[in-house]
Length: 382
Ligand code: CTP
Image 1 (tube, helix red, strand yellow):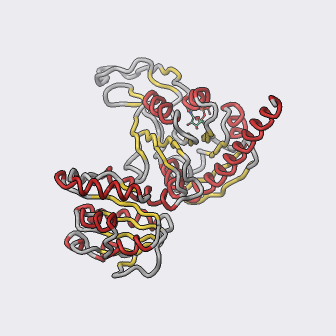
Image 2: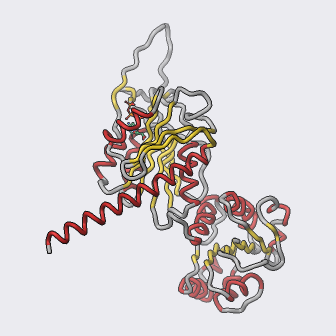
Image 3: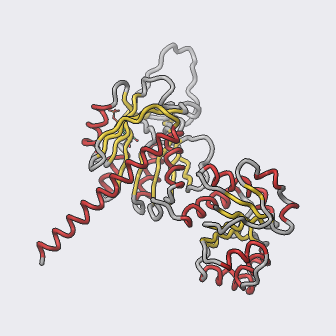
């Protein structure tokens, strides 16, 4: 059970959202509304995702203070007990704190001292809540990371959506990718405790709990992906990247005039996957193969040709699955021990879960092989 202690501050308004996020990832939540919190949010706002209690019914696996006032910080840091602080102090559990302090309070030496004490005690203290959407995004994922998961410590980059290459100031060459498959993979990786960055090409909305980098063109996607992959363990290349871009995009709107035909010259774009593969040889890479028809042969061939560790093939000619759809059906081909597997039609969240199972298995295998190689080399030198 995760305990969410809601303090008196405007961040309490977003506490139900954080709660929903955690409950949708399969966790049971209990909520304690600290004194004054009811001025901001009532118990009804948590219904369906958590039970609002006076006292927690058991010892939580993790406790989140969202928000924590200066008073809560002091109680927690100085062992003053009272409210949820008493429970946290009674057992060393994972604690995540989102302080909400006005600028004067935030710099007060006593408050700074309390924050230092909490950090020293192993609490995860997040940045002061600044009243914006983005400072709340990391809250749920910080809790998930604190709980630890099979992917904790892994830095995963996911590309999602479809790139757009401008023809003129209003038109572009694009594709039908909605970014739903990439978002589902990112969500599942967060749920398993990974630190996730999403390079999102023209995707609606923002996936909470991840670092979200919005891009539009192949060049922007290439630049941001390469930048992030330098410090990553895994890349999941789910984005549909335009293979061609207009040769000479114009900055104004092309007018129809009296023409009844216009020729558009396209030139090949960069192969992002290939560039990342060359720049980061040790990175574990998952590729996607969009095939019009049976994906088996294409997935096998692209796995080999692109030098990736796992290939996810899908038949884009089938209605109701793949591009833009809520469901998918894929064929997985692994380079190591996973082998091959057909994943039947299902919600993208379920397909994402199977992809991540395969990814973790292949990743373990790859690391095992690398460690074995190192051992053999060192024995040769001895
Ligand atoms: N990809 C990429 N850069 C491109 C095109 C594709 O990084 N310019 C990546 C995709 O994100 C995907 C993988 O390569 O993970 C395979 O994409 P796909 O479109 O299936 O294959 P292509 O390489 O474009 O080959 P083809 O068009 O011949 O099927």
